Length: 454
Image (tube, rainbow, N blue to C red; front, side, top):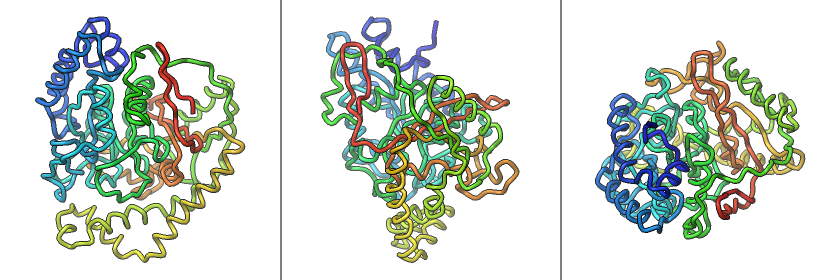
């Protein structure tokens, strides 16, 4: 028999409807899987066993009565520890919030509840979610299920480790500069950063990255990702409460014009990543899309140079009080001190670079449908190390592996990381597709199909 914890969200909905299994049995299997792997991976740091049991029992009753709330009813989901969940310890990976119990769910969590999802608990993050690996003073280090010596990346490292290891088919996470997409690439998963403001947010942590940070979904299957996004991004939460449990519609995709950008400003990229992503580009070309070489693409260069000032300034704003800074770990405290030392003109330069980038990309997308890049420039590195020290033999700094993702946040664009051929050692690799800004995705649920029409 198939282990129940391996089932996708779409499989679960079909199994519940057919009476082949129940949300209670799935929760038990998922918790058993958690017990098996979490001691090594350290993915889930706060577990709501009793709350999840009550939610699963209520979901089972709805399925038995033939009144499920939607395709997520009874599906186990984890929530990143920088997204508040009512009554559940939410720490942002920092002693600054180490004992905080929120009174309200942040909006996407509330929408998951309204869709019947079973909230398992919180997944680990780097402190203040400002680093590309996952470790913090409260909970320690999270490890990659593909190789426990290595990191799953960050800041959604706990979310990725949980989903990749079978602790729930979906994770709710944030992406402020690639924090969904890069870990998804390191974990062999699909991760979506939606268009800015597509997923409503309220009652969250202070917005130190302004609206550059958005909430999205991480999954093992694209179909599951679409169901999760339908729940959290619907204009009307009730719109997902329909009996549409079949596969996502597979209408033919019109040929797209895609620019393949292998690197930015000559920055180093791991040779295996470059080769795998080039194969993905060739596969898209073979499917009938136009894929052009974008080696000269330079629109993101100014933003990449200015990007660190945004995080440093936002953090400094939050912890301007020395007593608050004293509660931070040494790396994040140093980042805050750097932010306090930045002149206002440097911060404004970064915001101006983001504005210019949005204008330039609006013109760029008049001629292209997508940008294709590697998701990360490096393969996973040792779990306790903040960032790779070199890539392709070239020394790099903290954002050396993150060069492809921050510009998407600054521009407010949607982007997805999709797995491609793994490395020779079997480590996952992902490629990124970046689409133009849109006012929103209207998720249609008709009969047995579900698709995005905007």
